[in-house]
Amino acid sequence: MKTFRSLVVLKRPRQELWTAMRDHLVEFSGQIADIEEIRQIERRVDTDGVVHIMNEWRVRQQVPAVVRSILKTGELRWVDRNTWDAEAFTCAWAIEPRFLTEYIECSGKTMFAEAMGGQGTRVIFEGAFDLKPGVLGSLGSVEALLSGFLESIVTTIIPRNLRGVVEAAARFELPG
Image (cartoon, rainbow, N blue to C red; front, side, top):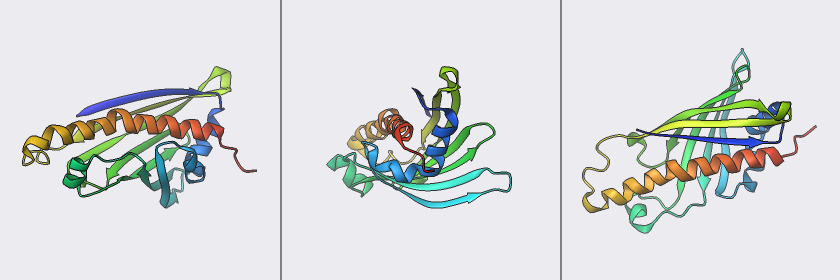
């Protein structure tokens, strides 16, 4: 299991950044460098106000030809299922890739804390990635390539996307 953690501090009050991230992600997704598209598939609100959202992400990252042939996909896509708890200012999430779904688990939590005397927000993004046994066993010489590619998604692409997402959210003008 591989863990990761990222910290971003932005000059945008916590409530505004939280609202932009939870309620307007699709609207500003075009401003995020690595993102091709984010599409909201489902949204529901519990009676206690907890919001559950499912999004599909497509990234611009190119998949190397050898990996593309193994994964049988030319693009990186995943679904994220997240739960937004406004009392705790946390978002618990799980990512389900659209390839090797039965072998990959990735989940974590994003926490929003006040910073800069209430004028800013500290966003802490942490999670874990697990590549289950069996996926790489029959691949022989390309095993290291695929393993390295998947690890790079976790250690670079996902944290870089988070930074891009929260920076775009900080620039987003809330309606109203």
